[in-house]
Image (cartoon, rainbow, N blue to C red):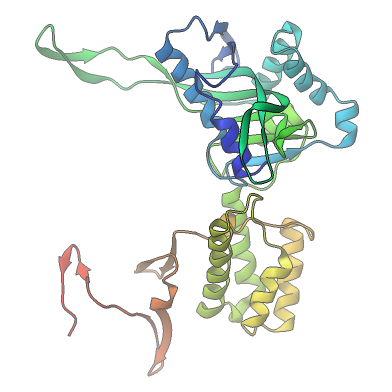
Length: 376
């Protein structure tokens, strides 16, 4: 799914937009015991309550593609005959009315998910009459091209509120307000089937993780029986480690700066062109940047070898996962310098009289601990 398709489904999660009739829930404690189950009708909920439910579910489609939102692919064998795919199809095709499938799914999740607090499994099903969109992008609401039925699952921690003082107007005094259990935004979840090319794709699902350093592989294996890509935060660390160890003494300031600048440039260009498909870069693209910086053949071969070992020879990476799009950070043991994206040209390295320096070009607006200073 691309960003436009994700946004199109996200817009469904409003009372006046969705065809969601009910929300199934299973409340589980940290010992993997079911506390309660419910099947709440959205139509019978107070408007404020239904909006809050939909807002929580909507967060399962939030974040960045390839970071928080990760595509899961099923093999042909899984789609033809596998327990995990049959269960997901049963949930969707029955619109969450097949009780056996619901209970089997709840048990799969409970056995796979481990949390330090109680949590809620939320399931809902929506049917979307997909409006026809012409080649020029114009939408025609009265000309539906197909019906897209999907299931959305959210796994939400339920946390106890902290004791606090509250002011009670009727009593004109402050006193302790009672603590209570509050449903937090989802930690993980998924959409099935994927909405690819604005159409249902039963070979794909869209998986969500709130924390980009954690993919909850046990949950993914239980629900999809599939491997999830390396977490975005781990991809960044691995890429940085490969640059350092493969390039050795050629891993200098200018080379690393060039890699970051060019990848940031690709991200900006992709955004400016409003391209729908997620941006990825290949190993070969990075090697071209390194070669242009004068990196030797032996170090390029070492980079290729380590990249293949860490990510796989055919793997393409999202540049957003391996570079910081907002800033460049230069650190030493005693100093940390943060440079806004696109202004790496303000920083350079020099050796003066045998001593290494990091030079920062400045103009006006220099402050030290908040105090404006003059450089003379």
